[in-house]
Length: 456
Image (cartoon, rainbow, N blue to C red; front, side, top):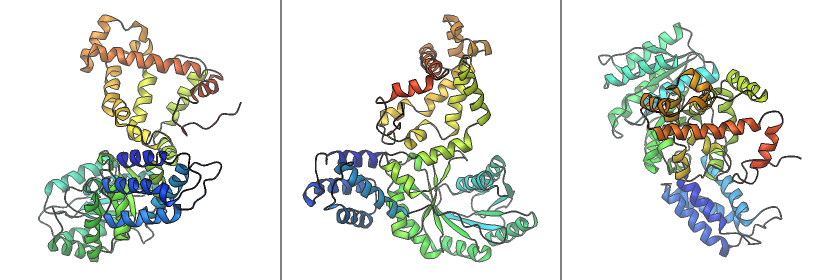
């Protein structure tokens, strides 16, 4: 998300080098580029106009301090204005209600509503330790009810079954009663979607809202529809008292216009981002962190939180002790590292959050594509335990067998062994106090800001 916008904004500020003050003349071209970058990102025109005007008002006449360049001054202003545009701070779910707190999900067909119900249920269970029940009032699509039942089982949420012969209001009342009887903390209700906004759908959701009296009414919208997402959200907001937005499919959206338009147009905060197809791929929306990603500064806080949540501490400690003692780093360790990265949303997602790598080119991200990592894992899985522990034994006939077993070519096996050899050399340097030496050796070779200065 935001790749195109990031690339263009960063290129724009580089052109301000060597100036001692930001004046109307020297930032005119830069602001024109900012305006074009936002329009290309499919940000709504009124939002673009107001944003550019605010940046201009704040930037003109700003002195460039000794420690900053004109580009850095403009980046600081743009960052602060992006945060203001997207809502200042994370808007948390309000679950302060007599249990069960009801969350009503609304949106158009195909927006990812049903999947988002399951993702939110998982997030509430894992992050807030809530007992969650889910139900579907979409009586027009039997497949949607069946899909939610399967997803509920996958994420460990209680599922209240429904069928196409029932009235949506009846399902809602029965689910609420059952959630109360079973001591649930949260009831999430999936609703029917349509291909476009229509009176029938709006009337049905309004009736459900009256029956359930939800503490949260979330509008689920596909980010790839750009400023149309903001306009649709506005239409729903006119019919329902929305409390927030879930922006889905952001991993496939290189523009990001919806994220930058919705708050300004509807006045409603984005509460969550859907960042992939898996049920774990849901992130709370932090405007300051997203603004940092847009400007190539990374998102270290989200990265740390993901590591805390998803990295297997026991395996990580075991590997650290193994490396410190100088014992061999083998292919099983290499596979574990790749699997843990995949569990954190994939390598491209990690690159987006690392300072200096957020605006990495598409070519770099393609090289680190998740399908390539899955291929490497498949190759290692095709090996015998002995081969994983002692890779030196892997010669001609073994390579042919491993390639055949993993559905790859011998060149792929050779490439894996070469990458493993490089990783193994790096691990050897970490033995004893070698980690600090290796970090110093990497300084200057990584993008600016990726590594803090090391003390001698």
